[in-house]
Image 1 (cartoon, helix red, strand yellow):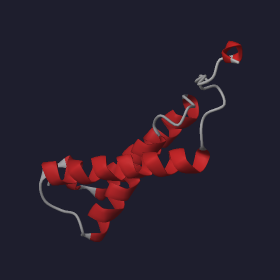
Image 2 (cartoon, one colour):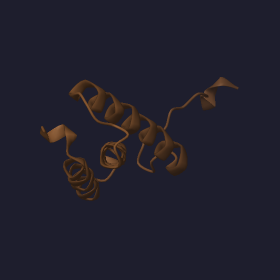
Image 3 (cartoon, helix red, strand yellow):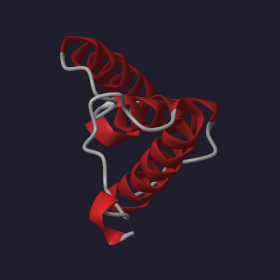
Image 4 (cartoon, one colour):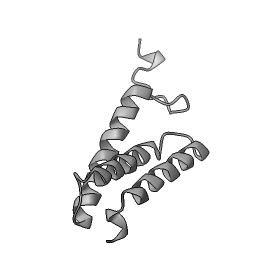
Length: 91
């Protein structure tokens, strides 16, 4: 069995990305970490098994969904650039 079929590899990858998220704040790696843990759980319970493309597709979809959900829950970052849509001199 190759590395992508081992559930614990995905869990370790997820926790490693979680540690990387703590070291580099900004919610960059959080979606990937959640996606890797979700993929590890699916491989572990036997729902997902088989080919590398299928496993990577599940990882990508789970990571993207987790990223959108965390962005919705956590909102805009405090240090993000503000976009001005109105000028004070327009009146």
